Length: 162
Ligand SMILES: NC(=O)N[C@@H](O)C(=O)O
Ligand code: NI
Image 1 (cartoon, rainbow, N blue to C red):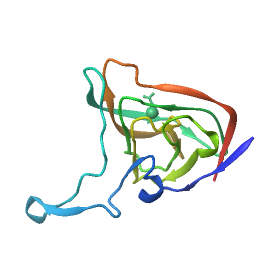
Image 2 (cartoon, protein in one colour; image 1 turned 90 degrees about the vertical axis):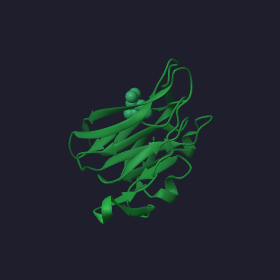
Image 3 (cartoon, rainbow, N blue to C red; image 1 turned 30 degrees about the horizontal axis):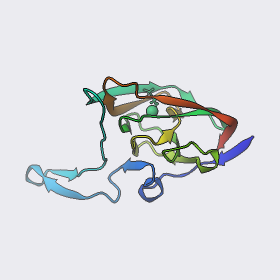
Image 4 (spheres, helix red, strand yellow; image 1 turned 120 degrees about the vertical axis):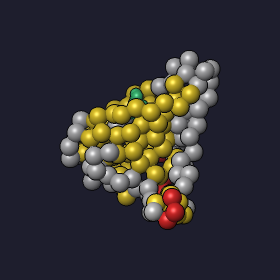
């Protein structure tokens, strides 16, 4: 079985797959008469298709432990999908470039409980993998007429490990 070690999540490393939503390194400026800092324009939200609109949801993900075997990936052709942790626990982000799913191009990241991710439309990813405890995430993704979740089994499962 192919093994895949987690790498730290950084804006730079994640650039080919989407956006990291965090204050570190973000454009920011004071608002509300200096009482608030605005960390500005952190994610490129994408919505397409018939009657497409952005929607906000909350996902409550069960906790997983590593090592963890994964057997599939998915993507959303008609929109981006943003996960922002609300519970402060770390989670695992597994991605591959849009287009043909190539197992050797799959990368895995360890996200802190203060980092959100925004998968760009078409980017392959694994469904939510929360760590440590059941965790809530604020989700911004797309609703519309076309089916927007394409799943694909991996020919060979992958073992995620720290
Ligand atoms: N299916 C669904 O709404 N969730 C997945 O897209 C996911 O990335 O967790
Ligand atoms: Ni998804």
